[in-house]
Image (cartoon, rainbow, N blue to C red):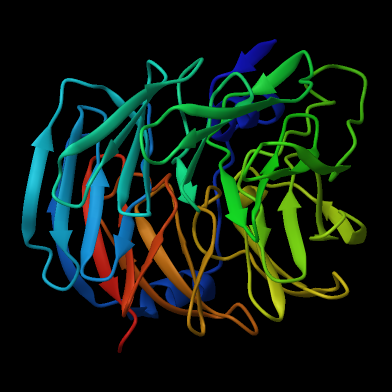
Length: 373
């Protein structure tokens, strides 16, 4: 199995030369005139050269980490540092929280579990490096490794409960594709465009379906990996593949509901009405959740590389490779507000806060913004 190191840069370099985005004056004026998103607070960690970290938030606290092995807890309202631990580990992925645990992965394939006071609870080893945040529910920690395996670990002591590995194509993308735990299941997308539902308790396969089928002659043309995290509600699980399709499936048995041509390495979000997809070349598209009909497209955000969208109230939030974050109106995609961070890319997922959201930049900036304005 050969792995392409970074989808967002390597694939675009292979298929096309970098384009210079040219906007009409009206479009530039709209970007400049957008209302400013209020900054709640900001802090600083070390720069991340390879890894990208999800901010994790619960109740009154925000957790952030960096490659150097530093884990920090902030007050969610003020950004005041509550504690910070400097470990000897090189963190590669995180942060996952739940069941009283703060979960981090390392480049050496270690899963580290801390409590909310910053004390290590346990450490467990898996087969290879971890690129997405471990998740936990019902006393099972689920972690994904770069070699395509998914592990279920006991949340009490980190001992292995089960392992899953599906077939992989000859060429795959090194990605931070995560997993979603919901309704007693583990949902994950894989290289080759496959989506699988596993039992959280024992790792048994409930169903597997193709989101997208490989097409083309060369290995690169046939690459259609799911490099983002599936989204789940009470009825559907939805996923999107690079160079492939976006689709929604029945959560109980994987029956296809709808699918559409799409290409995304960043991912999607869903609410009761729409599925919001960050597609290639800086386009955000909203599809009707039930029919898959295209409801709106937003392509004038000043960047070709956007993050996975998140939903915060009536807003869709996306950030970009220039350090800007944008609020879009959920029903028509209109740009409502915009803010700058530190000028470096935002690669990790944005995390909702009680009255806003938080993100981390490549340079290590930790920013919390308010949606109350």
